[in-house]
Length: 119
Image (cartoon, rainbow, N blue to C red; front, top):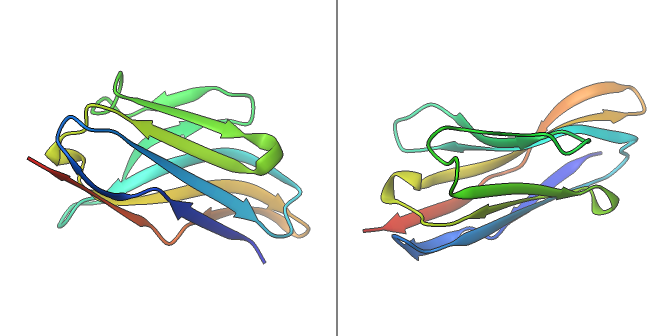
């Protein structure tokens, strides 16, 4: 069984910073892309940032230049450093991983962590 466990969310004032972490555990052969998505109230879930196993990154325009995604392949962990946070960054942040287990390639989600940015 595979689990993605997020941590690091919370309440922060506008202009502040947060660092999210997501650790994957279980019967994992390899992990391809890992990423972070967020969902604001009444909004659809959207990609924030992603990173491949080789380290190539992709960012949403809204966070480009303010956020950095990284990963530690030895720990099966992905991080999202967010700076200069804005109230519109508020939402539930979900970790995502495309990974290979013994019976195939699957897309997994974490349970989500709340990020609230106050103005």
